[in-house]
Amino acid sequence: AGRTFKYRKLRSGLTIIGIIIGIAAIIALLSLSQGLNNAIASQFEMFGTNRLIVSPKTFQGPGTLSGGMNMKDVETLERLSEFKYVTPMLSRPAEIDFKDQKRYTTIMAMPSKDLEKAFSDVSTDLEYGRFFKEGEKFVAVLGYNVANEFFDKDVDLRNKIKINGEEFKVISIFEKTGSGSNDGQIFIPLESARIIFNEPEDVDMIIAQAKSGVDIPSLQ
Image (cartoon, rainbow, N blue to C red):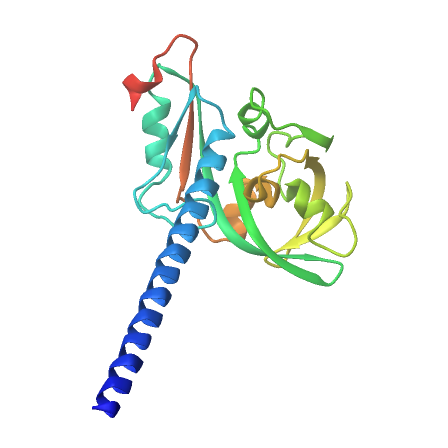
């Protein structure tokens, strides 16, 4: 009887431990899921409320592989008269090399002619430097944390960094936004991203800027 009682106490104790571990695992998963949702939400909110963000169902946020959209989808949206402009974006994780230190972060790419337009009426501004010039390649705009926190030495304007082994010149640095996902990104011309990631046609997101007076919900 004594052994049975001890066995039951042990089994009960193990059951309680199992429940605690299970609850902790659920909480951890929920926290991870919420963190991912926040990262995605902050990225989309950065581009304003008068814009339509189009992405395939498989796209889980910046830095994830998607598939399912290409430049034909961009051309389809460009034919709609409701939009002022339509910008394709490619998002990929990449290795960043600066003064023999390697880090990994998300690369956001859009056509060189569109970066200034995309940020012209949102709250994110450049702290130093300028946006891409049309036709410019192998230049980079760094998020605040990339320039000031990623490496032992700060990355300054006109410094060279390597992205997946390809050299890019830093032409500007964004102001600090307070969002880790945004401040940790690097923007490069889409034309260059297609070369270093070997993605000649894929598109992860499309930003469609509605004309003044257009009802965004009616387009969704």
